[in-house]
Length: 440
Length: 101
Image (cartoon, rainbow over all chains, first blue to last red; front, side):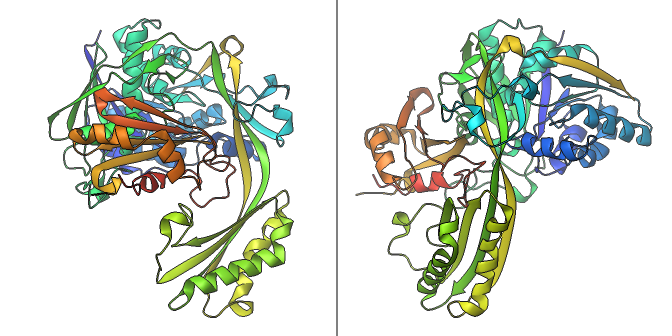
């Protein structure tokens, strides 16, 4: 049994950059590479693609990522754990199989199943967010339970080179190989808490190495354009040494780690995952050298009886239109243009919003009071149950060119279908993880 | 003399559904007691009243010299259905840093 393992995180969301994973695999001496590519809504979007084409529904970048990564993974004997299976892990595995064949590589893919629970729902479940019955929301398109390490561990035991999942909790992607390699008990809450701390720090990739952190005035980060993603050398006792590949850009420090530790954490002493209720308040960081950070501490207690299930539903259409004004009276002209749209179509929308980008679109008006930007961009957004009404916003804003205030330029219009996501809780006994092996 | 938090501290915004999470850390650990005294949940709620429509809970983590604010009903329904430009609320860390202490 190993004393230490090295896990890299090559992607922190579906649209993340491609090359950090390649650099990590090539130079990181990794035992495991994790690609975390599944945000709350991503799986609902993937489910919609799957309904149109049963061979799709996995991550849209799976093919591109795997084609470039697979030869490196095989050469360096690095196992890949990724949730790029999204709404259709089996189709994703078949795609990986065809890529391996094309490249002349022999691999085993383990597909983790069981997160899709849409057929178990009745509509009588209550949403956590609104405490409302699911049937009061729009038509359901997806329901996926956040599974934990118990779903991933059999895949690791199968000897697979690639472990492809749908929805599992992000930290579990990292915790599973620790439990597997170190033989930790799945009821050792202290170790599971420590491993979850490391997994949580790692899961957003570049957000630990200076991305989403950098500020040229107060928090400069070197070579941000070459940002490297992190790897962690985990010890059997649950501590970890976080680092990145030399020559890549970015920064690993106590500051970057603190920001990421509390990111998206609603309660620092009770961070819920399917595996453990983790306590982040006792974590200690120590800079060991340049871009080397020792992580100690953190703990856990019990695991939740219920698992979170994300439910995707149709929520109508959103239309947007934008147009810019500059120079004298730019704000006045943009405001007037917004009023014109409001007067013409505002009453057709259940939700309608007028922003002046450059003045009040991000934080509202109060914080920008007494400032006068040289240029400002009008943005009008609205939501409607029908596509036809939603797209009128862009059309009306574009028409301001010849029908609105002077000097409006650069009009753009957008239209997209809105998929909402709410959560429910489901007893974990109702969720049955399963495994399917696909050899290429 | 009053200073903007941006001169004293750094912050990161995160979202979970319709809940906004803002962390706050002093650049200099010696400023931690000042932040604990001045940056109360009530002040944050008032400062960001345009955005925060629900309860604000503050957590202190002295071991890390960290403050954390969990703000409910803060993101116009949440990223998946909000029509706001910054539907995640990712820029709101810098709205917090506009607060003067």
